[in-house]
Structure formats: structure tokens, C-alpha cells
Length: 83
Image (cartoon, rainbow, N blue to C red; front, side):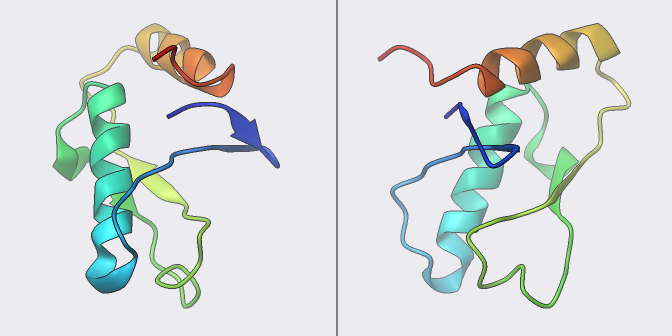
């Protein structure tokens, strides 16, 4: 996970897109990277969102400091983690 493409964070998963497996995996990975419970990362619903590769998410970050969130997002946007 990490890097930026067209002003968006890149999250790659190996799960197939059938039955929302890829979306669920991407949301779980994002929650894990941000140290948030999975329920705190929700897709914003739209007509295209279900089939689009681009997702908009809502983050419930009430219990996370702004500085910590900025640091993690900054690290993620700067590129993928080293293997």
C-alpha cells in the first residue's frame, strides 16, 4: 500500500472484485495502516462506487490525533513501504 496516482492514495489487493472482496480487503488494509478499527473506514456510497476501481472513503478518526493521521497519510502518499 502506498503511493499516489491522480491525487489519490493507491491501495492494491490480490482479492478478486466479485462480491466486494477486493473493496473489503482494501478497506481492511487501509484501516490497519491507519491503526483504526475496520468499522471506522467506510466507503462513501454512490452509483458508480460498487463497480469503480476508485473509491471514496469516510474515516471515523474521532479517537486519532490529527498529527498522527497526517503523519501516516503523508508516509503512505510518499510511496509504498519497502518489502
